[in-house]
Image (tube, rainbow, N blue to C red; front, side):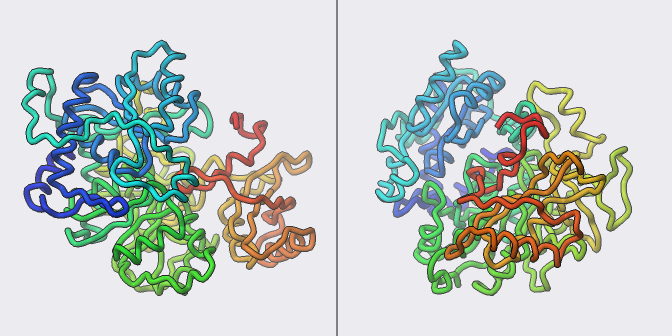
Length: 535
């Protein structure tokens, strides 16, 4: 078994002069990445030692992989945090993780320091700047709130690390924790998933072998690095392969298309909402996507309508991936290459999330943990080398999340002919007069209406039925909200759904809230009385 530092070392030996990171027009080779991370490791060693946790809080800027590998060289555990967190959210992860040091994009420094003060923590915060390696174009910097602020990282290449021997630093082992990633606790407190070097290496190796990464690939790296999918697909798998990752700080649909054209990128992993935003661009049919050999999507469901629209635009399907923080990203993927028809569940219209990846097993079980026959819907379970085995400081949550060595995912799914169809989150099921309704099935029908850009379906209280279906809809450009349009959408649903599944209430919104990884946030629309959530 190898560690992520072993992976980097091997790639430096084989491909040291090849470009590893491309940030706008700035290129960083593997040799430079290695030496820069040595220099930052020396700086970090003043504040933390092997086994300690470091908060890494940036968008997709070169400092993220530099600090990440510097931390791993010290045997530190990296805690990637969304830079948009408030001080309240930082307080929770800081208190739970007991982090010793943080590297934060300068815009997030005040919130982290406020959290540390509230806890009386001695956390040392090192600010870093999105403009250090290349000046982010003004229109994007303004849009994203990127400030040209303080740069306090020692970004000075260092050829060796002899100083580490005097600080009790131990080289990491494959069994050692590499990441601590907090799941988006929709009820109760978030849980810190402990992801070991062997888990991430397994996930990266799966992507490399499954999608045939080579040193000649240029990956469009726009999924957030602080999210497990972006971190494993865009960084760990790229570095394992000696490929190059092209990134810009954050996602913008027009900028993404320009990056594909200018840098002739070959693969990407984007949320479904990112593909929707590209399709919503004026004159999107004129973009040149011919360099791309793989479009993939993870983190949320990909609607059937989106697949069909993307196929018409590019000639290619979007390859759906399914995984979660606890599976270090990949658990099921579409076979590659795939030239068959769109794999859709005829009952729900859900697009398949693929087949189990290398060395990985999946099954569905009922509420008592009994395995169900092929084609029946139950909770999806997964087992493989990329799957975690514990949550930090939460033995009860760990025990509840595993059925022996199987991870209980909380996703409802069915399996047939080797394909996995993830229907919905177990906790999102709507119970109306005793009938179970899958929100995603209703959303699939809504997406097929020509006016609908995005939709989120939730259950809301109903004095007669217990719960009833409500749909929140954002419209495509050129459509105007009206009662007439609501009626047309309801009629569209009546022709395609059983009466109890048809939304009884439709509300038009300007935008469906999303996480920074692009996942639709249904929970924002739920009534707190239904879920106990604090919105």
